[in-house]
Length: 489
Image 1: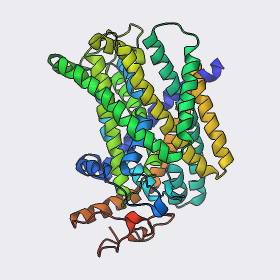
Image 2 (image 1 turned 30 degrees about the vertical axis):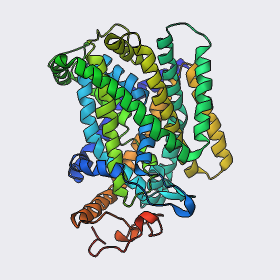
Image 3 (image 1 turned 180 degrees about the horizontal axis):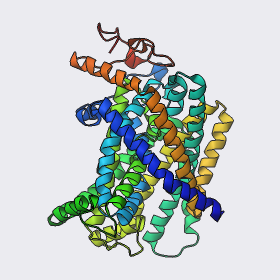
Image 4 (image 1 turned 90 degrees about the vertical axis):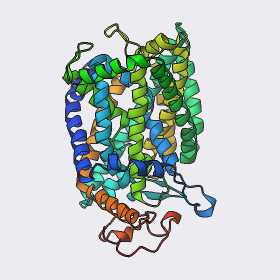
């Protein structure tokens, strides 16, 4: 087993650089193609995220833009924002934070493209919608055989990675945080945490996407803003040290000052790796959440999910960086991950820090569990319509939640890294094949904005568009008579 783990780690270490090139390259390419849509349309993002959907058919309640944002944020905002950032800083020094910021801005363009396509190629699921890369790969790629193969590979990879393994990692991180907070060797505690998590997760995931989105839209904003608020208090009580911390971040980022033995290469690679896997831009995960929303134009969810990248990295990850760096940590002392963040908090606010962070991390990780589960479920639905398979998958997810709380998950985590690399590679290749459609949709959206209209899309607006099931003038949000001159953006 050790040999298998070593082989997987070796592959991940080398392929991670290839993945960085793919994801960064895609971000730069789509930033250029969209003329920096991720920056120039920030006001539109803020408007789109609070837009309410119309009334659903037969009394159903459509998923709003904010609820879809909450599902994706639930998956994004978790232990990676607390433990992952701490690892990046401990290995790559303060400069890793700078490169996380840069990658969030670059990746915003890819997030826009993939979530716009996720909305365009969504399908009806009763009174709701579902979709994601498996759907736009199979429906959007001209070579249907190629599209079907890529879609199947992606669906299996994301189901394994998010639906099962990442949930084990989340529950494992909760156990470590609680153990650090209790500061006692209680042999029964991991199993108790695993049972509680599995029961709570079961109550949510068996309720479907409505309950998942409902829980997410409460937990994620409250806990994330509470955590950011705690960081803000630390920021303002140490305001005199802030210029020095910013100076350390910038100097370490460019190798001017090495911290923790980390030069520019360590800072850059750690910041990029942790940033990309934290905000998930280009990974193909968030389009699954984007597809659930009832909106009048696919571009609106592209913009909302770009905002999600910024919320994850520029806000929540930065909060962790503030907490750690303002505590003037001594690197190389053996503390990293959650422990480093807990010790930094304790330095600032005293002994209450470890329990407080454990509570925050519990809820953030729990929301990640239900968000990750939904990504797996929607791809299970792509592979098969069997309700029995869906039920078995739910049981497996709950089993992995319990397993993660009581077991060491190094091999499983490394396998998840491998599967997520496959998932991201397939998604990026697919985007390069069909991403031009997102450019047309953006032009269509902006043309209506310039005319003073509320942007509405109908699939007949783009002649030659195939594989689109929705956007046919039957959804409440899309009922309109196309305005003259908007047929061909």
